[in-house]
Structure formats: C-alpha cells, structure tokens
Image 1 (cartoon, rainbow, N blue to C red):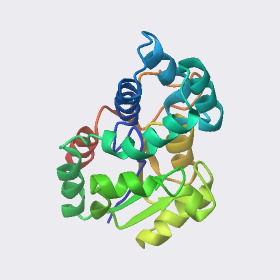
Image 2 (image 1 turned 135 degrees about the vertical axis):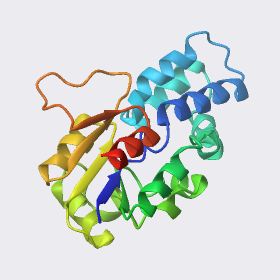
Image 3 (image 1 turned 30 degrees about the horizontal axis):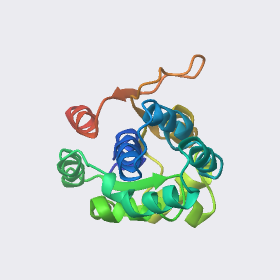
Length: 211
C-alpha cells in the first residue's frame, strides 16, 4: 500500500480564489468602492502568509471602516467562499480504491477544520494533521512522521502540495516523493526540482496510477 499525503490550501482547495471571493464580497457588503481595494487585499494577504494582525488594521484605516466589521465579515463569510473542484473527491477515491492510504497535512490553526468540514474532504482521508493542533508544522520532519504513524503506514509514497519548501522539499527530506501543485510563481532557483509537477489532483492521480 502506498502512502499519499496532501496539503490543503492551494492543493485540495483553491485558497487564492477563496480569498479573492471573500475579499470582493466583503468590499461590496461594507460599501467600499475603492477601485484598487481588491488587488491591495490580495497583495497583503500574501496567499495566506500575510499577518492578519497587521493587515486588518491597515485595511480598516485604508477603507475607513471599523476593524471589527472586517473581522466579523471574515468570520461570517470566509468558509462560505470555498468552491471545491468537483474532480477532487472522485480522484481521491480512485487512489483509495487502488489501495493507497491517504493523509492530509496542513499548516495553520485549528480553524482549518472549518474548511475541511465545510468541503466534506475529510471523509477521503485516513488521518488529518493540522499543525497548530499537533504543535509542529511543515517542513519539520515530525509532522510527516506523525501523519504516517496516524495512517499506520511507513513514510513510503508521495507528498503533494503547492509550497516548494514546506511541502515538496519537506516531504522529500523524510523519504517521500514530492509532487508540486503548480501555482502562479515559478519553482525557486537552486531548489532541487520536484519529482512531479501537476496542475490538479486529478492529474496527479492519472499520472501515478498510470505508472
């Protein structure tokens, strides 16, 4: 049996599109008509790596609205902004049917579970590891080792994710093959290339099952 570990954001779900969808809706709901507002929010979010504690006060000042209004809108509408590629679930089922054991490994707070529960993706996985819940984060080898232990499998298989360092290099450091979910940014110069580059979960499944 092969172990398959998968990242969540920008791998199983399109977080970039999720943020843009929420931010666009928030600007409309709060009556903010600034032409460059959406582009600015996407930039300061930094694909999820921007610090909300910094950019939310900046946004409140820029848009002249209470910070609490932005935070409340995010709490209310964030998870509803997810749209899951309908091909993801069937692709994961194909791996399970082929005898793979699947785990999800995501960096982030416990609220990552809100996304997992809202999408229903959790049913496809034998184990789910959220970094702030377990106290370690990618690319620390410990989080991959924990995921494999929870799956009841050795670290033999694949790590699939969008982050070159956290996902691909992190997984390869513990003996997994690394599949990179290509995003808008190029692969970093000087970093060993991934074993496989794909545009979608379905493409990854097609390639590995064909091999």
